[in-house]
Length: 227
Image (cartoon, rainbow, N blue to C red; front, top):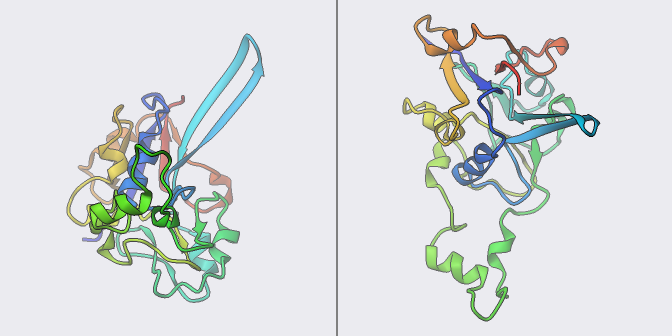
């Protein structure tokens, strides 16, 4: 039976360390400034009566995904397991998906990624140049992860969009997304809503919400409790 993946993020457990964002970049070979996993910070009040809110963000893999409806070439699509995925080979870079996404979680490659690692000027006489480091590792970038080539180029290219794929390559092996497995507070979990025995149903007994539910997108990243 097909799965129906969803993620829970426990805001009471989350410590705002951004390990999710760092691990996401490492796993998915994303360029500097390209964040599939990011955050929203809300600050309010006047000292000493202040409030601070940290909300981790990523693609919500909406059941009623506006980006899928907007894509004229079906590069954005829903797979059999409920994930909202992107086919880079079909993408024409029109950015319709970006314009339609109310969460701002789709990025566009204006240039070829990772040009920094081609630079031949060192920071100091004591350090190697980025190009030398790249050559020594024998990879497109020093932290290159070839496993990300599960269903498209491991490093995307200029002129297309990209976004969180919920680590579909890891889910296919029965593993949790890398941001989940590397969270030191164990605040994240991805489970199958179609499996009544999955732990996700127990987690969703907590008070929970999703972002912009009023829009009818039916997001599947659920935030438990509060920061």
